[in-house]
Length: 99
Image (cartoon, rainbow, N blue to C red; front, side, top):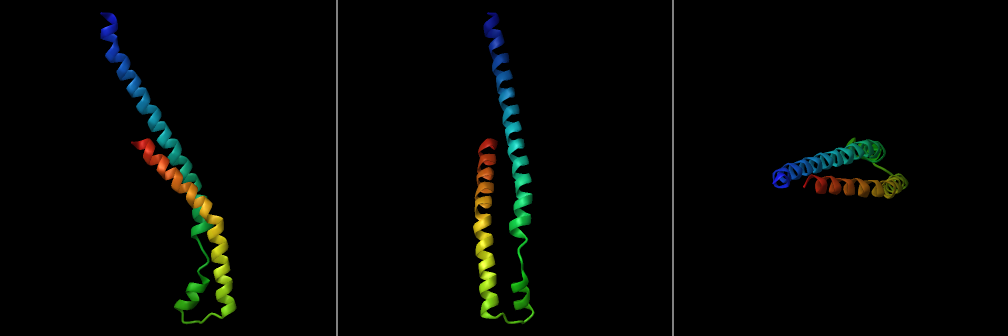
């Protein structure tokens, strides 16, 4: 009889422990995402807008300047894509952990 009476208490305790570990996992993933996003934003989102600024002010760019800007963009995209993919994976893991 004692076992039957303790069963709901044991189940409740296990459920509570599972929720706490789930919350800890979500917090760990969010902390990791926030730390990595700061570096990603600095490296990849604060781009050189000198070409856009020139175009907005009416200055025209030579073909060489346009090619240089395009090369810089391709280099930045190649460098930043793995970081962006990793951050997207972290977002998916956070969402899955919150379910």
